[in-house]
Image 1 (cartoon, helix red, strand yellow):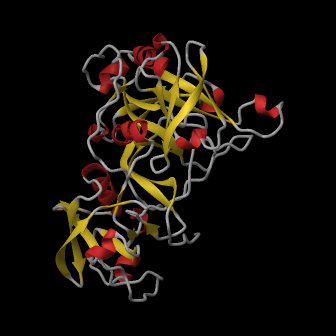
Image 2 (image 1 turned 45 degrees about the horizontal axis):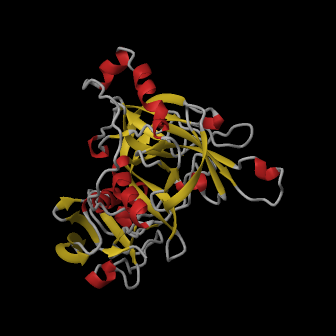
Image 3 (image 1 turned 60 degrees about the horizontal axis):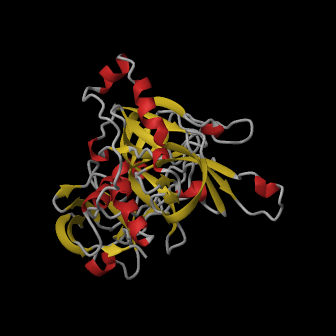
Length: 401
């Protein structure tokens, strides 16, 4: 049996990660670090809401064949995106160098996709289901959540803004569909369920320590997602967008070397888009909350590590292995490990077991709380286990550097 090397996850809330994408077919690593979007309330983009679907259970909608109705309702708002990079050759410049998906969010012509879909583009083409093609301007990007906002100048009748759902209400087992442009096959729809919530993914934003920040609260789905689906919507059975398809994890590859669907896909929750996109449209950027800690990722919290750290076998929480110099955690007096162990992880660090009286059983729960319930300059109370005793520590959330 192969031994898996232990990796320490940096949180920004210390996010580290390697960029992953459906379109670049990059292997998704098992460990990640994290920083996340601040959940300051933002107004939703103005949209033309499609006619309401019946409020019925997902199972009933599927059994009655309403997936066809759902597709007819949603597909007009889903677009194909082509990226053109300048290569110096007139012939080569005539062909796109990358593809992805996106969707319309308002009647002003704003379209959301993944940042990695348009990264490095000199020109961006947007193709509508009607056959209309238009050049798009880049409004701004968010490398932490892997989001990009585009704007097109097209007749209003071409714009069908999709309705947003509430990703906080998403449950494991909910039926979902993905619509997008896999392998250039625009308008493709696949069906699956929500496989898990609260996952952590690596971002595309470099952290000061040399790694990458990451994002949390990610939705996992088994709806087929393939290269070209990136940036397209993940939709519930009421035709509402609950996520933006971003990455897949797979050991399978196509004949041309693209990573292929294996039933493990990931989507950015729509509530992050609600927070981030209005700010990008307004200012071109978005600030993220920052703790300045390094923690073990969830899948590394096992009995070997727990015993090596001298903790009881039933211990849960987010263990601190490092502190960013000058960051909020250092200023608040949070401690990282300092005592050598046989497994290479320093013992004696604080174990965060609650934030604002909300239990923290694993690092991903801490990250989800920071995303959904804090903002820059907010004071939170971290409850830590230190040398066998519980201690409450006040910490002022910072802005990610």
